[in-house]
Length: 272
Ligand code: IPD
Ligand code: CA
Ligand code: CA
Image (cartoon, rainbow, N blue to C red):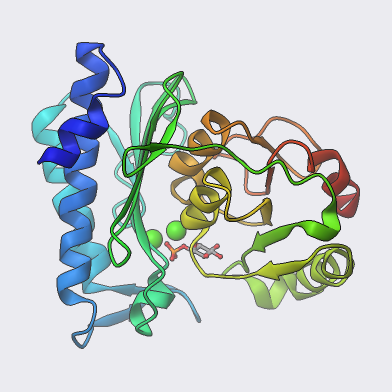
């Protein structure tokens, strides 16, 4: 409970505090379910040839929805597993939820996964919470109030040469159709940077860019819940987000290029 109060203290505005408290509570409780069930056998269903869903994705989503609906019954929710809201109806204030980002890691016993909760107003992010339960890292942000990790204010790196940068990426579930594009990107970027990481959770990649562990990231074919919270963390930590052409990014786009800002124009040409 202390962490909820500490996290929500980044704003003195009563409404913002209440929203942040609710999102922090939901993220911490959902993360606790993941931690408890992580090493147990899982019930796995297939959403596609390589796209999994476990009983914990569903339990996490049910818990988050229950908390947010009780606290804010008027705010609709766009959530991955229930797709509770028509995707065309996104101009209003909505929650956007990934109940478990990094499901493949979770199902294989890799500890790199998280819960992601964002609040949007008129298609713009105003609040983001990402919780990584195994490392107990709670990232949170409110628009204009900075980006935070466990009470510490975040800033992106100052890395200014690609050869000194660590860049993250991810592979889409339709990789079999996109293999040439993905391989071209890796082949052209890898020789120019210090290294590339594919850790398996897009939301964590964004949180890690915000806190200075990565200098940039790119990925194609993402869904709104993968990026909704993370992009606000990156912006509030001083980074830049665009699509592959340099246009300002929205989580309703499927291609993302994010960076510490300094490296952005150096990365963009790889996507032309
Ligand atoms: C996936 C992860 C993965 C990314 C995929 C996402 P999920 O989300 O973020 O890193 O490469 O594009 O769909 O299915 O684990 O919530
Ligand atoms: Ca996801
Ligand atoms: Ca998910």
